[in-house]
Amino acid sequence: MYKITLAIRYLLKRRITYFAVLAVALCVFIVLVVMTVMAGLVGDFKEKNHLFAGDCVVGTESLVGFAYYEDFVRRLEETDYVEAVSPTVKSYALIGLKGSDRRVGVEIMGVDPAMHSRTTGFGNTLLNHETAPSKAFEQEHDPNLPGIVFGIDLLDERDVHGHYSHGAGPNGTSYSVSCFPLTPRGAAPGSGAGMVKTKTFCYSDKSQSGLARVDGALAYVPLEWAQILCGMTDPNRVNAIHIKFRQGVGLKEGCQKVASAWEGFKQDKAGEGMAYLLDTVTVRNWKDYRRSSIAPMEKEQTLMSVMFGFVGITTVFIVFVVSYMIISHKTKDIGILKSIGASNWDIIQLFSGFGFLVGLLGSSIGLLAGWLFLAKINEIEGWLFDHFMWQLWDRTIYAIGD
Image 1 (cartoon, rainbow, N blue to C red):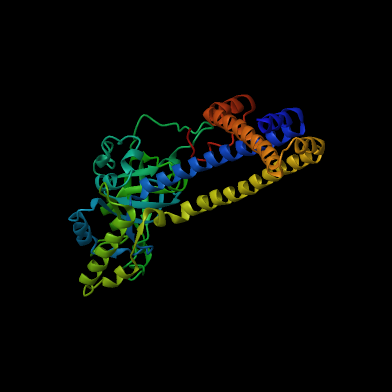
Image 2: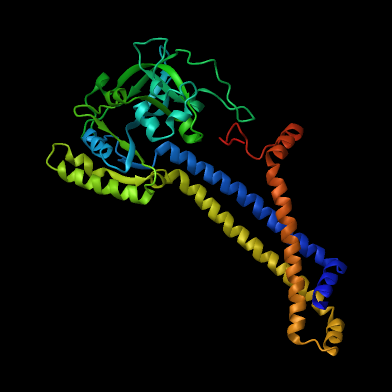
């Protein structure tokens, strides 16, 4: 009993121990807040990338694409592990208002909206067709023109609160889209005007995926028109096939089955005229497919963990130094304890208990303060912005919600 009593007494009577408790509390508070926020941001970012890509992607980095994809899509749809499939074309284009000489370089993705919505989270990103994503390219202004869906950052700007100013709905503005088609061998199909294909589209909707690099650089057009503009016809070609697995199918297991199916498909098509295009195709899960976007954030999270590990080690040394100083000033107490029969082990237990109390009290204070801060973090940031016009994350730049 005297061990606990003396440990508590040393904790309360020596003011230097308050600094040790404060150091532990501050360390725990910072680690809890920063790592929780970082983990939340990384987790949210991964989920958005997952929704953008689906579970698995069979594709090539070549702008030429690959042929015979229809046969492979049918083969996948007949399996018991694939729920939905979506072939896509991805290329680059110059887009501008019809009749204007100003053009902006963007990425275009040709999709079948119904298939792509079943495979990915595309349907939930639409502003005006969220409940009917299969009609994403339908617009009432000019039924003779195909629709185009823009990434929201291409048309709108975020305000300081991260909100967009949306209009009442699709306004029927026409846009000219110009692409540079390539032959299956990767060459330009002709010279002069034949090197560029242009088509007029009518604005039909906006897409907000929550990924800044996607929303600020990507426009969606119907799959068949993307193939025409990019020269991916005769036979039809695509750049990627996005796949969603059935419930209960693991990511690794599903990707292995798709890879096996693809190898069998390649062998079946080995004698075809464009079989060489299949050699550049790879099968990747969504994490590998979006690795260039996800890896930097994961590395930052790892570096933060290492840095806070060193902070924790520093805090341990602070507690050790405080304990050493108290022990060095308590030689009289130690002598009295030994005179009444306390062993060396009892003395060690006494001061170990003191160190434990410092760590326990500091950790408890840090955990409580961190939990309260995280529970009110949005209100705190809002108050700081309202009174001092300060934001940790500038919502006009970062695509971060509440």
